Amino acid sequence: MAQFVASGLTTAVPTAARGPNVYATTAVQPRIIEVGVFSTVATGFYVALQRASAVGTKGAAITPIPVTDAVQPAVTTAATTHTADATLTAPPIRYARLVGDGAGVIWTFPDPGIVIEPLTTNGLVISCPSGTGQQIAFYFHWIE
Image 1 (cartoon, rainbow, N blue to C red):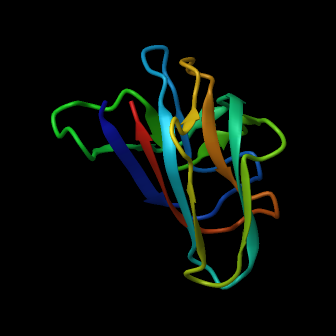
Image 2 (image 1 turned 30 degrees about the vertical axis):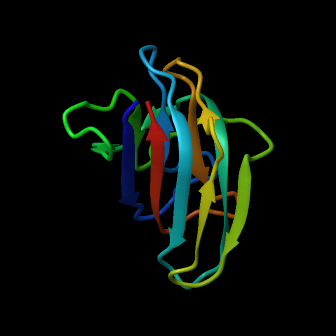
Image 3 (image 1 turned 180 degrees about the vertical axis):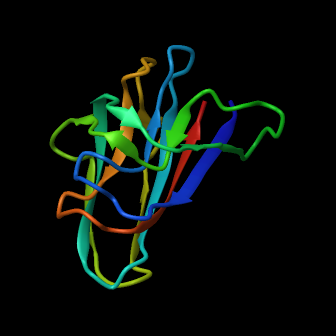
């Protein structure tokens, strides 16, 4: 089983239902083992990790980086944001408040990780429930 990481920076999270994301495809059921989120602004805000049951429209794609097998391409898709709201489930899987530039959280998930069922509409989104305009650095680490 290969492991992959997708990381990036947001310029501004536009709404609570848009944010960095990873989605399964019909060909793979990814298992998320770690997610990191770090503030790049002085203002405090909340971040959440939520399941998505509908994609909305994904923004700029991120090319996943192989961690354990340099020749196997990732099948899971990742993006820096959404350009139309995703449908997020409640409550969040994880929730945190980040206060100050550089504040962050690393969420780890024991085996088997967070399993995303193999449908293109199923995924995980880092959302900012406390408002818009937040800037974050982030990464998703998963197994396929």
